Image 1 (cartoon, one colour):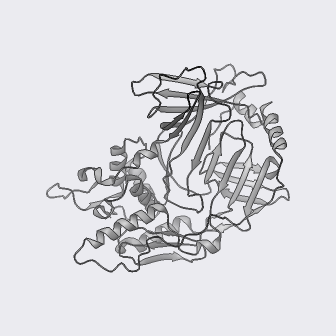
Image 2 (image 1 turned 90 degrees about the horizontal axis):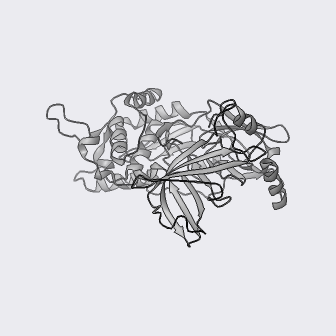
Image 3 (image 1 turned 30 degrees about the vertical axis):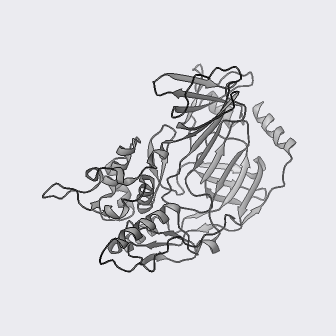
Length: 443
């Protein structure tokens, strides 16, 4: 959640002012810069897509690439000489007062801009008059083969010879991936140790580095995050962070009366167990299978898988949230991973976690918590990263002369549908009613 400091900006925003201003600053490969604002950015095109879990299932260990897209007005040819591909974009959001002036953060201060993210132009689509840009955050840097790394950068070393061994510790893997992919982070070794302590793991945990060498760096980072019970995200200042999905800290308070659409699952989701498939295909679990988190953790050898299941169960057992989808007035402070409490017209309160949100000034915002219904979750489902790890493990075992049986390893799992089993609790508003709400917020 983006915390607003006391002052004119916060006062106006808390009162319902949603007359947002847009600003983007480009830095090109030759280190020249370009700033664009409203008027140069096509109205309604400045859109942020932010997620910390999959679109149809609640996951841990997600490493999702977040996206900014917008369209530049090039009717007068102002940007004909610009090479946007690969340029860095720092995005900002401001707030206009009723007279069209930008609000300051403090009385008498300068114009206040909230930094909303650091992105890199990935796609450029133009017809001459308009230039549509699709930008990705630094999570995309991890989409390179892990095998490109020098083993000395992420393998443990033999204490006698100093040569890389076949093992890697969580910290060496994390540090090696971030360093090679050029992604800045403020996570240090003691933070990784604290995550291990929280899950009650031994501090000397080791992964078989050879078994994961055929993955991408993002696959390996995702598997590491699953092991630690966290998700990875690039924050609005461009730093990689490891975060827990849990009910803690500040909560967004919303009512369905302020929404144009709200639908919810009929019941809460309660995490009841952990199921892990180890490197040899054996399954280890804790808790019940009513609503388990299932991980095909082929980074984890059988000798340790039971302790990993126990550690993750310690972190997640009993976590309760309500899957929902909502459309509401835009709110720049909402970020994926935030907690939210929604009160409906009957006074019922639903506690949840935001797993995905799309924010665009001048348009309604969509916010949701994605999770399978309990019945679907009790079946087998694995994340894309887990499937990649499983395929890599199979390839590794096939190359071994005395390989153990892996007949019980499920490569693809049983895929559930995208439906969340939601109950619609709002009457559909007309386009005119939605435009009226937006106009009221802008006034």
